[in-house]
Image (cartoon, rainbow, N blue to C red; front, side, top):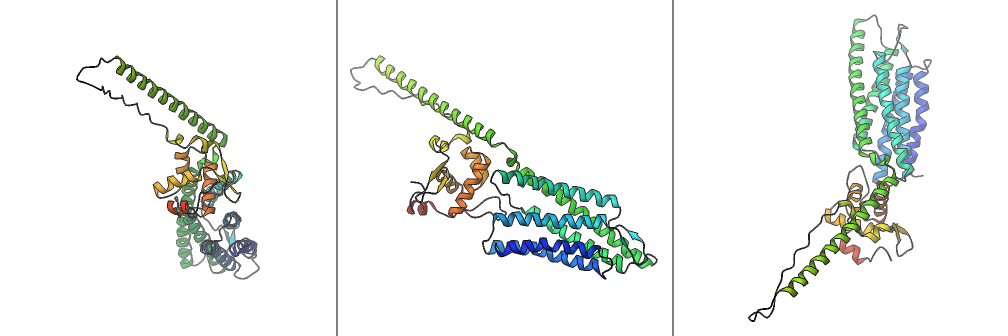
Length: 365
C-alpha cells in the first residue's frame, strides 16, 4: 500500500474521534476539538490526491478508498449537526441548524446525491470501468468541508459562550445562523447540480453491453450490404459501357472511340461502421511478448493522430464499439504509454508519434 492510500485510511480512522469529542459534553471545548479534527481530515483529502498525482501513484484502490472516506466523513458530520441538539451556557437546548426542517431537507438531498453517484460507480465497476472524480465534484467537496467545519465551530460558540439573555450574543447568534444557512443552501445546490451532471456524462454505464454489441453488429451488416450493392452497381455500369462501345459504328476518320464512364454513385456510410471488418470481429490480438491487447488499438492511434487528442467518446462514435470496450482500449493505450493519463480532463494527449510507432515495430505479431 502506497503513502497516499495510507493517508486516506488515516482520514477514515479520524472519524470516530470526531464523533466522540462532539458528543462528549463532559470534555471542555469538545466541539472545538471535533471541528479541528474534521479540518485535519479535510486537508488529508487534498493531500493524498496531490501526492498520488505528483508521484504517479494513482491506483484503483486509492480511487475507491478516497471516495468511501469522503462520503463517510460528510455523512457523519451531517448527522452530528442535524440530529444532536446542544445546550448554551443557560442550559437551553437548541438545534444547530434553524429552522430544523431546512437542515433535514438539505441533508436528504445531499445523501441522495452521494448514494446515486455511488450506485453509478458500482455499476461501472461491475463492467471493469473505474470512474474518477470530476472538477465539479471537487468544488462541491470544498463547499461541504467549509460549511460543515463552520457548523462545528458555531456549535462550540453556542455551548461555551452563548448567553441568550444578552442582546449582543443574540445578535451575533442570529448573524452567524443566517450566514451558515446561506452556505448550506449553496452547498446543497452545488451537490445536486454536480451529481446530475456526473450521472448524465456517464449515462453509458447504464447501457446494456449486449444491446450495444447488437447495434454494432447491425451496423456492420449494413456496411457489408451497402458495399455489395455499390460493387454490383459498378459492374452494371461497366457492362453498359462495353455494350455502348460495341453498338457504336466506326467512322473512317476515327480510329478509336472513346466513351466516358458514368461515375459510380457515391454512398455515405454511417460514422460508426467505417472500421475494417476483420479487426472489428477480432476483439484481441497478442503482441510480441504474448500479452493480449485490443485489436482496434492501431486504428484508434490513426484516428487520434488525425484528431490530435484521444477520448472514449471518439472511439464509440467512430469505431462503433460499446462503452466498456472503448474504456478498455483507452486503459490499454495508457498502460502502453501511447496516451496521457486521465487527471480530470475530458480528453487525453497522444504521447507517441506515428514515426515512433513505426520505428519501434508493430504492436501485434
